[in-house]
Image (cartoon, rainbow, N blue to C red; front, side):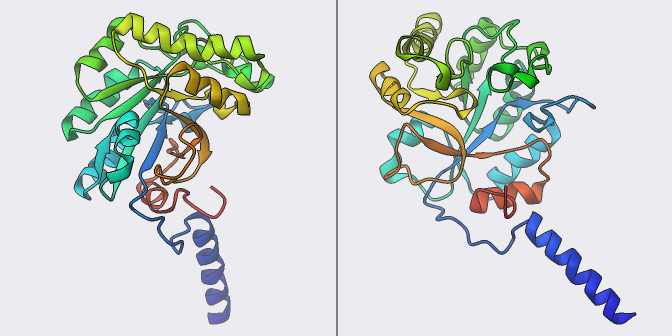
Length: 273
C-alpha cells in the first residue's frame, strides 16, 4: 500500500512540476518583463478565446503582486528609451486590439496601484471580425462582438497619464499575407491616424497575431516607430535584442497567481508554455 501511495505521489509531483516549472532558473531580472494582455473581463462560458479574457479580479491580483514585490512600471516606449539603465524588476503591461474593458475594467486598477500600460490600437476596430484572418475556422468566433474603445474613450486613457497608445495596423491585418504596398499602408497608416486623431507621437507597434514578414520590421522602422513587439514567448534584454522583434510574456485568462509568478520568473508557466 505504501509503495502505491509513494508511486502516485511521485506521479502527481511530476505532473505538477511539468505544468508549473518551479525548478526553472529565473531569467536575469535586469531584463524587463513585457506582459501581453488583450481583455480584462470575465470569461464567457462556451466561447472561444477565453484565454484572452483575464478577469478583473485576476488582473488586480497580478498588478497588486507586482506593486507589493517591487516591480517598476513603464510604458513600452519608456522601456526602450531607458533600456541602458532600467532598474531591475522592470515591467511593461501591454494590451492588444483596443477593447473597451481596457478603460472600464483595467484603468481603475492601474490607477489604484499607479501602474502604466501600453494599448496597441486597431484603427478600424468597430464591427470588424478579424478572428478568421489567421485561421479561417475562427471566423465568427466572437471577437467582433466584444465592445471596442471609442475615440473619446481612447482620449480618456491618454488623459489618465498612465497609458501609451501604440499602433496595431489599420485593420488587424495578417501582414504575412500582404504585399509591400499593403503592408506599408497598414503599418504606416495606423501610426499616422493615431497621431492625427489623438495629437501624440506614436512610437510603439505590435504585429497582429504575431505574423509578419522580415521586411515588415524594416517598414516599421521606416514609418518612425522605435520598437515593435511580437507574440513570441520570452524575456529579452532590450540592450541587445532586435527592437523590432521584441518577445512578450503571455498572460492567459486561465493563469492562476502561481502561473503568473512563474511567468514573471522565467517567461513560461511550465515546461511547454
